[in-house]
Image (cartoon, rainbow, N blue to C red; front, side, top):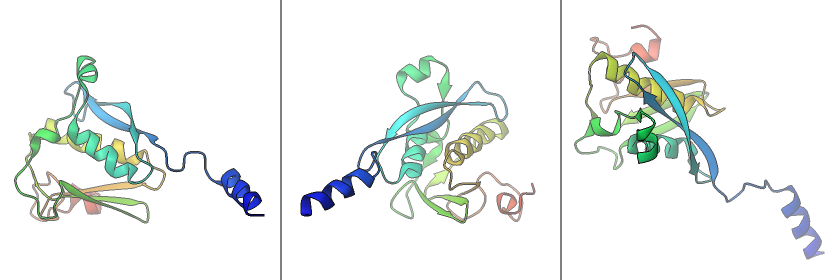
Length: 158
């Protein structure tokens, strides 16, 4: 009976359980505003795939991908001490992915900032549970928002 129960459990368990999953990481190609975002694939662990995809975005493209003209400006702009023990915190609730950087992310100007936000959005929106992305700096203001309120990513208004 024990063997039969084990066979049933194995038969109804997902085939990918405990194995790597393929995720997309979007890197910039060119220097337009916000520019073209091109997907590359990575093998992610079976848990924390959105977090893994963001870490890969920060790490940047492989040498082969760089030869194809892909780049990520994000990783080079993250500096200073972390206030949470990592580069960022990610929370996905009710369709909204809230990414808060725990280190300072320096802006590159309108073009570079737009490309960074565009690749973050594309990378996170691939996941079915994510319908909206909110990207915050370490103070909790919308990343690269220079308005007094710093809330344009929360309200949808610039």
